[in-house]
Length: 198
Image 1 (cartoon, rainbow, N blue to C red):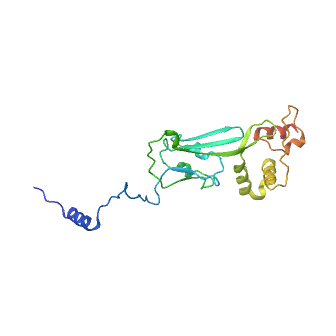
Image 2: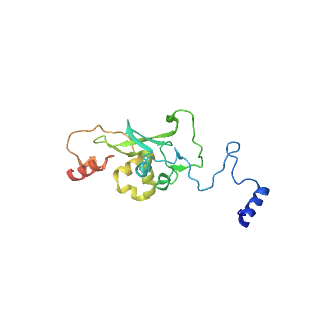
């Protein structure tokens, strides 16, 4: 018969006085550690809708859909592997963050295991293509500071946001670009054409 080692005896005696090492999870809430990676959650006021989280998600658990002047971002918790890449690559560092919630079991429908946010898109005044979400353009303009005024699109949007410029949109036209068309909100392709042809 083999006798237990002294270390094992020591641990057994300690457990008699301290109690079990495991938590009483179903009966008491479990408190995960600080660096625990739980489900990712969008924060509406901090997310600018840039789509960086969509691009870096290895499990393809984040959907990005642009339609009807809106960008819709959806995170599917049932597909997520909780790697933390979305949080690590978020430019604002607070747009999507991993919570400490781990208990995602449900008896309901799978469609309940998701979170969706919508952001308003900015549209090119010439071709009608989507440029970027308005909050992303404003974030870039604030980060650039005075350099914002070197780009007509950023400058116009920033001034419109401060109510210093009118937000009237001219309908797209099939004519040649004029010099005045350079001071409009344009996508990069239309801006290149406007600069070359004017």
